[in-house]
Structure formats: structure tokens, C-alpha cells
Length: 318
Image (cartoon, rainbow, N blue to C red; front, side, top):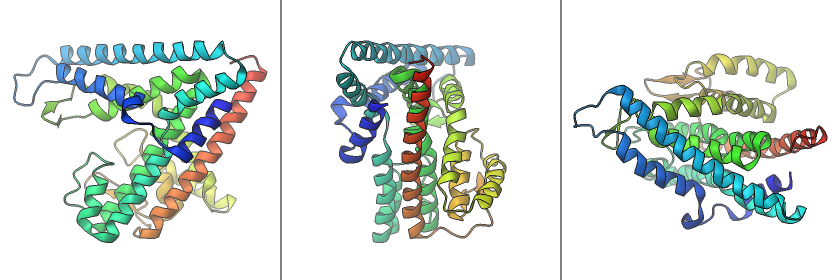
């Protein structure tokens, strides 16, 4: 429990470690190297789909196993230390797997850039999302930033903590690897000149499975954090499930729909989905409100996670 609070405190006050020391960066480097070997160039002769799927699955499993073993080794060393040193080591190791401060700052930076110009807003948003931002107007940029905050609130905070509570540092580390692999490999068509339809399918499905429960927990925490009366929250909760099904993803629609309903705004990806269509257009203040809601979720999550770990310890599960 102390490790979790320490990790969140480090995130709040110091943010991300340097690139040289960041385990998620190391994961990304491995995935980039492996991806160049498993995903064929767009213009090349296409190998059989099964062979690309198998190569992607094997490369994913090799990376996940390495991450799992390293996290297990750190945990084993930590367990041999005094309690304060154990919490310190695990907290330092857990922190890079959580990224709330960076996410919040990047989203707020999009709004600040929009105040200067639409072009600056688009350029800042491109740091957050993989979609083409060139055709987005001011409203589209703002909606995309709020959507990114909601979706990544799960990916960067709630889900790693969820798996940390259940399986310790190895659980959080494997989840972070799976989510990074999905971000780099989980595409249906061509990305950066390579075909990912089958090479990245295992990574995409693995992330879907590992994010399924946390995504719904993120939506629930958002609804609880809303400044709505209790009965209003119940109505919004029922609507969240209906709205979430409008997105092609089995998971990301849940926190995005909850955020749209909590803020009372419409969030859309042109030609793909529209959430809370009856909502008003998002304004600059809504980006700040979304960040405040996210901060409430992080604090509420920490409290619930601490209670869960105390409960598990009481039953002899550590």
C-alpha cells in the first residue's frame, strides 16, 4: 500500500523519469525493433496471415515474459528488505508504470496551444493521438483532447493500479507492456509503412482482455466523481453503457462516454462515433473540468486500492 502512495506522490511532484531510465521507453524500443521484423512493408509481397499472427504472438509473449521476470526479480529483492525499504523500492519501480501528471499536462497543453492558434492546437494534439489531426477544427481538437484524457486515464492510471493490486509489480508491468504493444502494433491496416492487420492482432486482443474490467471501473469512478446528485448518477450510469457501445473499441468507449455525460458535452470522432449527441459543444473550460475529474478519480482509486490491499492482506493474500 505504501508503494502505491509513494508512486502517486512521485508522479504528482516530479512526473516522469528520464528517457534513459524509463521502463516503458525500453518496452517501446523492443516493440519497435520486433515490429520491423514481424510486420511486412506495405508494398511487399504479403506472407501468409497465419505466419504473421504467429510471429506477432511469439514476439509479444517473449517481451511480456521478459517484463514479468524483471518485475518479479525486483519484487523478490524488495521482499527481503525492511518494510520501509521495500515500499521505497516498489514505489520507485511502480511510478514509471503510472502517468497521470504527464497525461493531464499534455491535455491542458492542447487547450493552451488552441488559445494561440488552431495550428498550434493541432500540433500539440498530435503528440497525444494517432488519428489524422490535419482536418480538425477547434472543436474537434478540444473533443479529441478530452477523449484522450478519458481513455488514457484508464490506460495510464486505473488499469496499472488494478493489476498492481491483484498481482503486484509484475501485474502492473505486464499490463503496461500489453497496452504499449497495442498502441504500437494494434492497427487494422497500414501504419508507418507497415501492414499490421495480422501481425498486431494478438497484441490488440491481449490489451482488450486486460483492459476490460479496468475500463468499466474507470467509467464507474468518473460517474462517482461527477458533481451530480445520486439519482442523476444512476441515470447517467445506465446511459454510459449504451453510449459506450457506439464506439468500435470494446473498452475505450466506457471512460469516454462517462466523461461526455459527466461534462454534459458531445464527444465525436467524425465518421466513426458520436457520444452524448444531445450534449452541448465543448468549450475551453471543459478541458479543465475534465482534468479536475481525472484528478478526483486518481485520488478515489488510491483510496479504494488501499482498502482492497488491506482486505487481501487480512485474508493472507499478498
